[in-house]
Amino acid sequence: QGGSWDTGRQGGSYEKGRQGGSWDKGRQGGSHGKGRQGSSHGKGRQGSSYEKGRQGGGSWDKGRQGGSYEKGRQGGSWDKGRQGGSHGKGRQGRGSWDKGRQGGSYEKGRQGGSWDKGRQGGSYEKGRQGGSYEKGRQGGSYEKGRQGGSNEKG
Image (cartoon, rainbow, N blue to C red; front, side, top):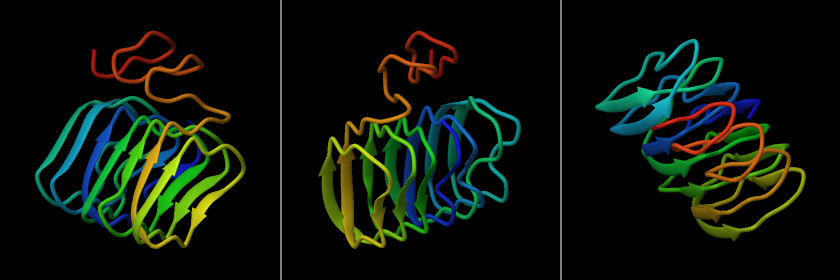
């Protein structure tokens, strides 16, 4: 939770249970956002967007483009200007992730400050651990129908 997510991302994005600062402003493409809640949703979004019960503050979906699959991200700022089909699943931590990533990187269980600045390759990330907990871990916020401060998607 916190910071800004996915500013200027490119690719058909699939996001589920995001929580925190600002997400996905101006997204373009068929995006799936399930279980979002918050002050402003979907500013300037373009494409078939499926959003349901968002949770969190700030604004979502600024200028995203293309197909990224992200699930339960939480933390500083992620995915600024990412390009390509990226799989981000259960990220955890603070700092900033994935600034200007391009292409296919496979990352698993990272822990620490900032990740993936200017990486190239379709990135697959799984089970990050750090400051915040995502995708049904235990901590301040729970996503995707788990128990805790805020519940998304059931």
